[in-house]
Image 1 (cartoon, rainbow, N blue to C red):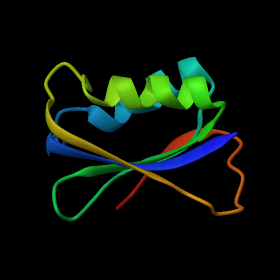
Image 2: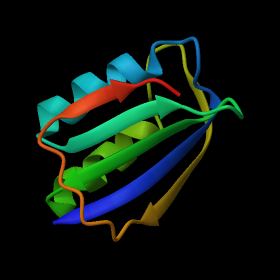
Image 3: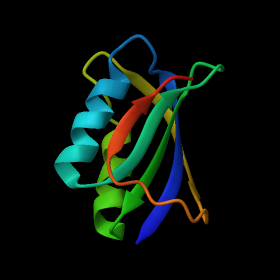
Length: 91
């Protein structure tokens, strides 16, 4: 299992990025959450099999149709908490 924190930067708030991320993560069977950050970026915590998490990371470069992604930063996360679903959380 792989667990990562993904920070997506660019025009990613107010463009349904979180909703599309939710749909893509659920399609892939990846669990975790997506949330807006105060700096205008979006953060995703994703956990699941390494190939599926990698597919979600790749998707982040596309995002929602109205998004304009400038950067995707990925950091491995070592926390023990297990998520059973993928959800949108409030920032």
